[in-house]
Image (cartoon, protein in one colour):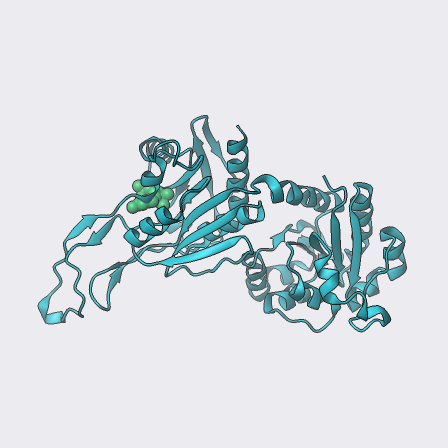
Length: 398
Ligand code: C5P
């Protein structure tokens, strides 16, 4: 699977850098060609000579090397199929999150047009620092895959999360990346995300707490798997997904979303993750209602977008239709019922008791399909997005 793949490995300054030498060995043994760049800090922990001996290629350190004119940062980043940053220090992740390019390694990250896997390595307090966690989220929502560090005794003598994932784990993540990268190649997907808004008058609207994080994570995971994705997103989405395979449409109301989805068909995959307002205001005013006039709203039902796609005739219906069920009680029965009623292949069921899920970084879900129920552990919304993409890929193969 890795044969012929070109990997650019960036080694930054952490004691875990010695493990990257083993990673190079695993990757090259599997047939990949590895080229490495070291930050000045990385060079303190492993020598360029060790790296060059294992990769069989010159290790790149300086932006202005003698041969800079022939192997500059653009060429070096373009020639790779995948970039792995291992170990990735808190400082380097901060730089990447801000888009800085003040040395060769950070400039490579800025210039690359390929996916990246990060293997963070740091002290537990650094890992838990809110500023670092913000930066980590930023690189994840920009499309990076993060292989989490482990909880263990750390090189600094403290105990906790921060120890870089083992070379074997990074090797598996690399294999998984290439398996995923082609699993949905050539497929077209439509994903709805965020909440719709329904106008009351010229200045007021009704909406809900959806942040759009889960829908964006699914859209990114499908795009990373090779699908061409149209992300139809509510205007008040907190986050914006970006990936070369992804095209984003912003919509306001449920009716706009319904129309955008149907105009984007045909597709092989439809994922309805948006929190669509079930009702719209039928007597909305196009001017601002005065307080003295009072507010007497009447409602009418919005179209059900997932059902309108799931119930299409076979030749127009996407082969994989995924809906969500946010429930506070009888989670599985309600999700199974929803799956049949709306014509979904899979319903991702969430327990939203006490507001859990909305706006959070992680999600606890169950996959409800014709073949039964699969309870998933609590995981980041990014990882749940990948699980959904994998489920879809195997469903399309069946
Ligand atoms: O029936 P309920 O709103 O709980 O179902 C949730 C699922 O249906 C989600 O996948 C949501 O995106 C979708 N939905 C929809 N159109 C609506 C209401 C919900 O697509 N009008």
